Length: 203
Image: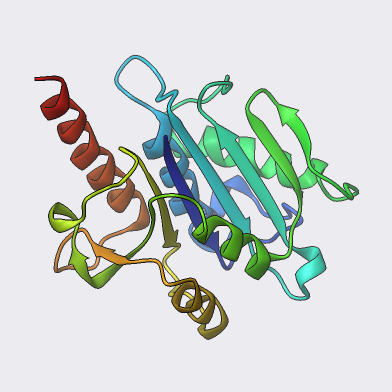
């Protein structure tokens, strides 16, 4: 299983933003949408072995929301960022009155979350890694399960509190290269690395 957790620091949790300003007033929802598209879409199919959690962080913590996407059940996901952003916006708007997780569309579950607790729980999954430039090269990291549970952030760096959780959980830091890349590029590179590993195992 391939699992991602993306921390989205600036997207309005209420969904109160316009699709015409995804990179500005929407708090870089453009990059969040690209992460979703890159995580799941192939040329003519979807990656059914992939899951993605997005923590939409907002003060105070009770206002935060988590959207979970499961490739095995996803429908209506197109590769363009505007329609993907609309799908996420709709989930956030519908989740305003939710007091627990609910599936709002096939493969999309949304609900309230305590972000640091959810981050810690994700870090305890098998093959959990923290994607950062200063980690060990991904080629040197031996995945014990044949998959991964990768933590990454939006264009904003993780906060001190988030970094403290990641450090306390002791998950390895893994680097995808010496240069800082967009979150969606990191997803693409990591998928490619594991596509190659799977191909080598089958050879």
